[in-house]
Image 1 (cartoon, rainbow, N blue to C red):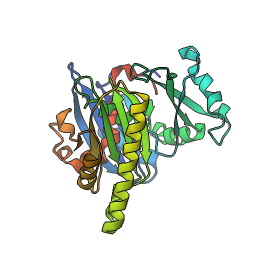
Image 2 (image 1 turned 45 degrees about the vertical axis):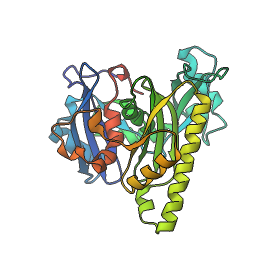
Image 3 (image 1 turned 120 degrees about the horizontal axis):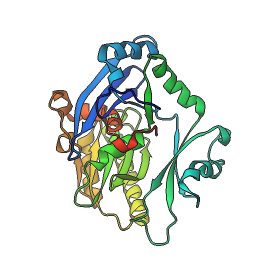
Length: 314
């Protein structure tokens, strides 16, 4: 896709939900530290194409290189052994590896591959990849209203890679980092090392829903989340024993402090709430200093943190 000649640096992400659109712009300084210059939410009015057309005109979205997040449930992410083929043939080879894992004709699937680094893998383990798989109509249904509004998308992102971009900012002293973030539908655990995604696991529990439970049921739900995280990190250690993790960060709207306390008691890692102010600047967005606003916009912020090397559509 050709970009317009006059564009602001960095990326602007469009995170579309049922009732609103989150718009986030970020760029990186020469030292790699990002600055978030825009983080706003707008209520959807009428069709998505109508809403985005209005925002394109009012917010000058044509000035930016644009990416958008695929909604959860509209794609699948598989971690599988990498086929022994050249890089240019990887997506094609993966198509046949996943043919029994999807419930639609695999020859129609939209597939992208993300290689998992082998540096920290246990000895003798085969190279692995993440395969991102979507129905073509799911991609079209998401992108077409945006393009119908006059916007030119440069990329389409997924939540796992957006969260990777945030998690990687917290890596220190050559150690990896883990991030457990919750939105309205559930949680996502990601582990990064060297800026690369090594693990992604979904947690089928919303902290907002959990907050509505009686104390005894809430404690049991917190225990299940803790056990799931513990098992996922144990699995990671078995696969990538040479990768040391420095911290587990926690973000979400709901009883984050309770979960943080329980995780800290059960895990070998230091556990603490995520605070973007440690790794990014946003001087013109005071509301982003609150943990709740950071959690609400985390996926959009992560998508806007795509690097310059990610200029091609993902």
